[in-house]
Image (cartoon, rainbow, N blue to C red; front, side, top):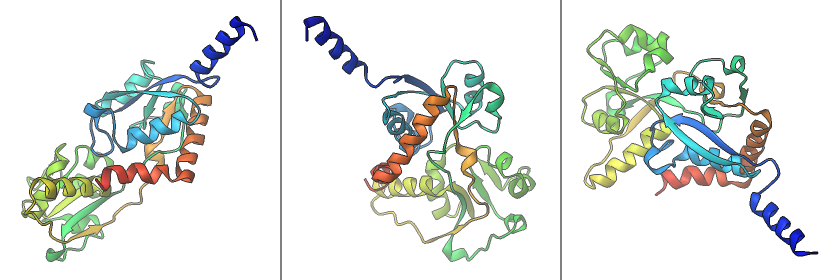
Length: 247
């Protein structure tokens, strides 16, 4: 093989697999431990990055407020978005992938209160702290509360375990993983703090379709799906979760 052929072979090797691309994808701007924008990391980001890398693609994450995510896709300023935020992106030429993560929201109460939450009426007369947009996502459960001073939506989910423990709110609405993550962080920051026993009240079935990524390129979507399946098969998917929850 002559020098020209050697150099060409090296160049192809450095370029990576045929069809490999840099994929710009819009994520929410911060939602620990799923999205840690300042670290370009988090469970959701790492799963997507690893799934794309399975066939040589490189993730370029862009962190945006949730409302701007579908706008970025429609404006063609990104190649993909992590969830459609309720808009049908198929109309915009989008190709839906398999959900890399699913948020499992539940109501938390102190076990000592012995509350039962089985219907929306069970929330009446109680103070509730939820994440921003919760009433819009679960109108049957939360819209009747939005005009009550006992109902608050806040982006500061890091304080939810402490608010519940101190009795500032009787009910907290949070994803299970997010609540566990912030409980662990609280116990690390305050070694003497002990989280009281809590009850989890499931009230809806998490729908993976609500958390599907959307790609402009169907082939990259297919590569992502294949990579995600491999992450599950290899055990690396579970390892990414454990990295953030067992530190």
